[in-house]
Length: 112
Length: 114
Image (cartoon, rainbow over all chains, first blue to last red; front, side):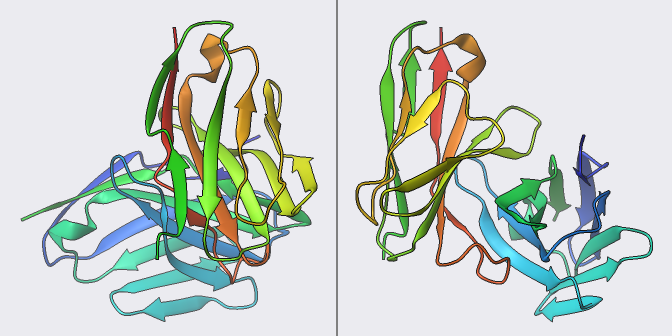
């Protein structure tokens, strides 16, 4: 049962434009959703999170939106930069568990 | 500040061999985790620890063992390596399990079982 789904394996965006990465979930019990960014041969690094009681969180160029009725969240990157090219993972925390439940990831390529 | 350090970075094992993946953190975090990532998949939790001397199974614990004798170290042991254990292994730590205090990850150990 894939509880956190990232349905787009890859995304290509022109430099300076907006990147939108999407994540759907099935279990409504959660504490936070987190976005991690991963470069090749490195570990995931934390990017931004959103609490279950909020619908938006912003940090510089990164904004995460949470739509609880649709069980959907999205990460917006504006403006996109070539250094943003990486794999982005959506992860759910909480629901009585110590673990993070990860999606399969979306590979973002920002084209100069 | 080193954060989470994993060794080795790469290893090739033969079927049936054993090895220990090392993980150490210098952030004084109580919580530590081992994940594996298979190609095209998200990370899955193998084992976790809530403090020295306390460990518990995650989603995919079969074929692995862990110990936590100190706050800093959380080694992962493979006793009888099998091809299905070919994966990239990530160790992580956090001060609490709450999502508002994110897990910090090491750079991973790429393990191939042949």
